[in-house]
Length: 291
Image 1 (cartoon, rainbow, N blue to C red):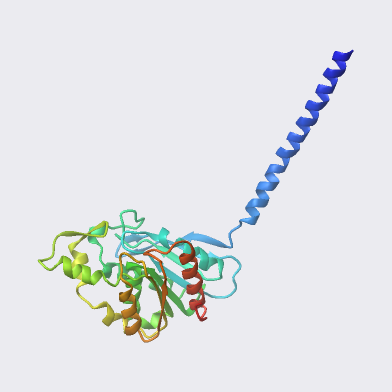
Image 2: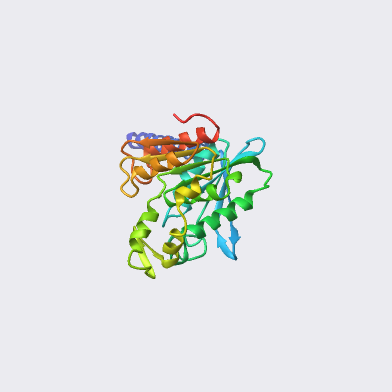
């Protein structure tokens, strides 16, 4: 009898334990669903690719969910040897704050580009043509507010934005340039002192002679000064690739520019510096004073 009672008690305990396990398993989907709901995105991403001179240009459009009326649009440009992913954190931030954003890969812009082209066939002028194609693609799109198209670029992308704004000033409402690589012209002058080689390494990337030749056909400061709209420049004091003096000169040349210098920031903002840059850029786009 003692053994039977013990056996019965064990069965009861096992049954209770099984019931608890089943209850916990039943709750897991609900908890998971709740987690997904809590992390639901406030924006959607659409692939939005186009062509420039029969070459494929990959891009993604970040659109706020539920935002009313035509939206401001920010076109974001990555740097040399990078791709659209470098600009995604900023695009996400803009879209979370009722501002549409477009990121794309320059044609031949990097070894990891999803657009057509080779880096040895790319130059700052071909990238300016890419940006022109993107701007023209979105002009007249009723989803976006007229007169509210902004450019946003980092490193060489910042230089491309400044060049493009100087070439078509009436189309650009404002411009944000992070650590713009305005020293690239000086680098190219040094690399061509003894002639133009077929290829040359700039930083960690191999570019072709067209890159060197096109870079020396203009003066970036002479071009950018044609743009009289608002410009926000941001540069770190610890940038190992582009001295802050180049951004300081740009701020002097431009008629309506503000330069924010981030103490200790490098080339390519991260962490608190990226957050600061995103917030100040959003205020700038809204016509507010950056902090």
